[in-house]
Structure formats: C-alpha cells, structure tokens
Length: 255
Length: 255
DNA sequence: CGCTGTGAAAGACTTCACAGCA
DNA sequence: TGCTGTGAAGTCTTTCACAGCG
Image (cartoon, rainbow over all chains, first blue to last red; front, side, top):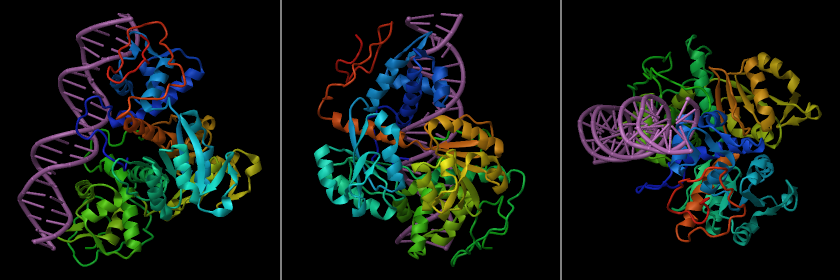
C-alpha cells in the first residue's frame, strides 16, 4: 500500500515486519477502549477479537516487540498501551500540517483520532485567499504562501495533502523542500518524492472498487452476468488473437 | 486490511489474488489518465511507473486477467481500461448509500472519484432531523428512519458508514438487515457482520501512525532518542522480569 | 529486436501446534 | 492449569530471468 521507500530493505534484524506495524494502531485502539473501561488485563484471544484479527497473529505481532505478557494471565492493558505507543512513536508530539481545506481537509481537521494520538494540527493551509483567516475546527486557515514558513517554524515533519489531484504534486514538492519527510496523500495521484521521504496514500474510491469486485462475484455465483453492458466493449485496436479468461466471457471479446 | 470474510478460502482456481485485485484500481486510474490524453498504447514499464509499482508485478497482475498485451509493443490503453473495469465490476451501476453526513460524509458525497467509476450515490442518510432535506452535493439528506426503505427501493448492496464510532455498529446492522452485503467503514470501530457480508475499512489515523513509526526511525538513526517522555512510563502491575527489546531502550523499562 | 507472459526462486506473512512459564 | 511465546510448516506475494511471439 505504501508508495514510499522500501523499509528494512536488506538487514532485517531488529526490524518489525511492516504488516505488524500496520496492525499496531488497531491493537492500540482496542487497548485504549479497554483502558477507558478500566479493564486491567486482557488475553490474546479477547484482544484479538476486539481488534478484528486472530489471536495467533496478535501473539506473533507482540513477540516482535518483546515479551510483554504473562503466561496463564494475559497482557497488562496500561503497560501494553504504553509499549505500543512508544513503538509507534506516539509518546512524542508530531506537529502536522493539512494542505487543502475542502470538505475532506475540514473532516481531517475535525477528526478526533489525530489529537488523541500524538498528532497536533500545527496549521491548515489552503490556496484560496478567500479562506485565509476563516477558522476550521478552531484553527485559522492560512494561505499557501506561508507554507514554507509554517513548516520551518513548527518543525513539521509530517504533511497531509487533501488538495485536488492537480495540485498534489506541487504541494508535495514544496512540503518536501521545506523539510517534510513523511506525507499522507489523499489526492488520487501517485506522488514522486526523493529518497528518504515516505508517502502513504488513502484513496477513497479504491476500497469501494475492491468491494465492487467481490460484490460482483457474489452476484455472479448463481446468475451468469445479467444486465447488458452500457458501454460498447471497445474492440482492440489493430491486432487480433487476444486470449482472455476463457470461462465467463460472453460476447465481449473482439473475435 | 479487509475485515470481512475470507475470499477464495480453499479452491483458488480461477481466482485473482487479493493483492492483485487491490492494485487494479491503481492501474485503472493510470490508464484513464492516459486515455484522456489519447495515448493509444503503453508499455508495462511506463504504466507501472504511472501507477507507482514495478513492471514485473504489473505484468504478473495482468497475466491473471488474460493475455491482453502485444509483445514488442505493449498494451492498448482503451482495451485495457475496459477489461479492468469489467473485471472490477465497474461496467455496471452500483447504487451506494452514505450514512453519516458530517464533514467526512460530505466529502465523500462530493468526491468525483465515485461517480466517474460505476458508483452512484443513491442517498445520503443522517440521524439528525435538522439535516433532513438539506442538499449536500446536490443530493438531499434523508433521515435515518428511511434507511431500510431507501436500501430496498434502490437495490443498494454497498453502504458507506461515515458516522461517529458509537453509531457505526448499529447502522451496520440495519444496513445488513436491509440487504446490504458490502460495507465501507470510515468509523474507527471493528464491525461485526454475518458471513457473506464484506467489510473494508479506512481509518484516517492509522496511516498517520504508520508514518510516525517510520519517522521516528529516521530521527533515531543518529541521535539516540532525545526529548523526555511527557507521560511517566506506567510501571507494570504486579509481576516483574519483563524482557523488552534489549537494544535501544533507555530508562523506560520497569526494572 | 523489444516487450510480454510466465515458470521458478526468493521472500514475506500467516497459521499451526506445542513447549514452557506463571 | 491456562495462556503466552515461538519454531516450523504452509500459504501468499514479489521478484527474477528468460522463452517466445509480434
């Protein structure tokens, strides 16, 4: 999923597997909920259920962090919250900027899940001068001209891009030039960045397309693909002799 | 990433690997951009760069769909757009409902990436009666009481949940009871659903936490973890003898 | 000759199953 | 006894490298 650099390319000794890192936030969320309910300890089975994974996976994941459980008992909730937070780097403060304050940017600015982890929204930035000064989620929007100054003054190393696709690469370049080394990209574009900069992306429509794929499968299990296609299947340019998936292909193939 | 059912649990004959399915939307996006620029053909190398993957992976992915390229030439852009769309089930119309019209719900309603694929926002639903009737992105918001009727009348099989975490499971249950079999969940909760229902989740803060993890790594490469922790490391309840990751641990461990 | 399509090898991740400690 | 921690096995994914077709 990450578009950024390859982590742990060769050595891989004390490194935590990427798949495990990606699940730590899930565990943390489940543990935080338990903590709020003052639950003192939890078994791998219970915690796994709360996080939506299976217990073997969870135990294996935790084994990369160290031996933080007690055999016959389970895990101490508070202690584990701390250990995972520390591992994820959430015991320190991360100032972030959000660039592009449309609906999505506003949603992000308002999102409680940032503040409650180590993230502090240092600034909201938008290219529209009309927005400058308007507070969103209690934070005044600043003009894009200020970007470099804001990043520098606040020591921002993480930037969030929620601009339209067309502006994303340019914003990205400026963020990187100003010193940002991690970027979360919501714009539907592939960003190119120099080595040493991490990019992760969230594309709102990709997940939906994956669901559609599986949904189609379900529907196709009994009825053999109903509904006439609305777009005429474009016949392949010059060459012939395509070999598609032989099974379920009605009258779509260009002879 | 998916919280839903296991796809292709045993048989795995004509199935496309899940990892490939997850990349098809990326290829589709890159191809669509090429198509708009009227580029007729593209090599695996070029397309891979545009999609942010490597070319071997791309060719392997396409090999699961069939032999749609021309050796010595590359892929026909239009033809490939069609084939991938079909494979993903995007040649048909997918009515979706979005439940929870806060900032995020509004952002989703306005998001162009849905409509341009096969997705049609059939309705926006919110629990707040004050919002009923207000149009968002040109679509009037309807009250949650109407949920079952809307889903039934429109034959909705995909639902998007952008409510607060507390409401998500309940909304999910109602969607499923009304006939929805695929759910995209933006609320930071693990949803439980019956077999046969797919859930995918997008958690805005998880990606940020993963970035923080890597960012911390970068910072720790030279200086050995500065800044005094703001929260006192909670000492483990009763038992002692924890064995953490030996290497980089300053004065954090509970003796 | 150039680029696709694909076996085969390598690598990453998950699951199993049980030894071992509290 | 009960549950963690973990080697080992199994599965999925990526990468290599080259045969083969246009």
